[in-house]
Length: 182
Image (cartoon, rainbow, N blue to C red; front, side, top):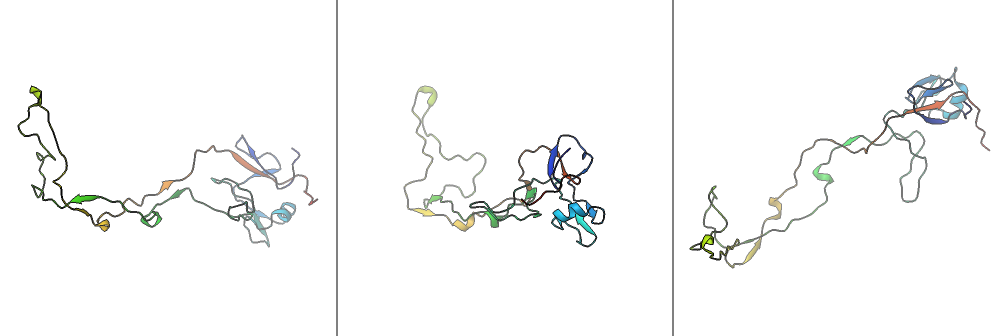
């Protein structure tokens, strides 16, 4: 397979071809892999004296380096993101819910199971009588409820933020043509 050393390629089979290695963050010996070390350096780990690291694409999606218009800056070897996140009340935008209520008195202080908002007096729908049901209080001055009485709520359980994915084998070429800069 003729490829440039350092090429990362996706394969549909579960192993690295001869002269390649899977991209699983392995720590490699510089003495035994000096050519590929001269390309990668310690971008993906290692101490730079005796070892260097290969890229680790296990559970990660590669993105291009640099900064596109309106996007964040991404540097080679940067490891970003998470599979799950927790949404807390600090993440929620400030907002209000208006709910108006009447100052008219209620007929019961604590509703029971048989209590209803309104009932029809003296009307019999079975005899064709019209039934008028008003589900509001008598005309009165409207007052806003206390906005602090309704707080934000929810659990602090993590939830996944990854879309659908397909697992494949990413491998890096360790033995191939050395890429020139021009």
